[in-house]
Image 1 (tube, rainbow, N blue to C red):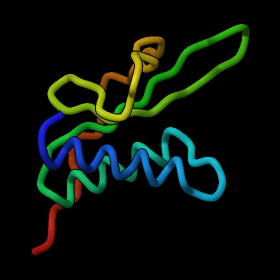
Image 2 (image 1 turned 90 degrees about the vertical axis):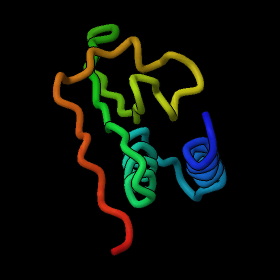
Image 3 (image 1 turned 30 degrees about the vertical axis):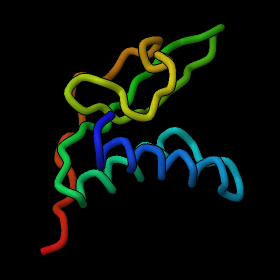
Length: 94
């Protein structure tokens, strides 16, 4: 991941690793999506679902140009993503 995108992803991962408690994938993804948007970097917040061993599960991740940013592996590929991604990111400072 080039430049500011990669740096932002690493910063969010570090914050998750060193935080008190255990942030969810949604909390991590929302933070990353918001921070990228504040920098004027377009990205999409994706949410997917699956049924695994009779249990309903959901997962969230951030994509840019079709690539998952906060997924070290392809975990998100095991989820059926909702068709409409949240792609309107917050504007940077005015």
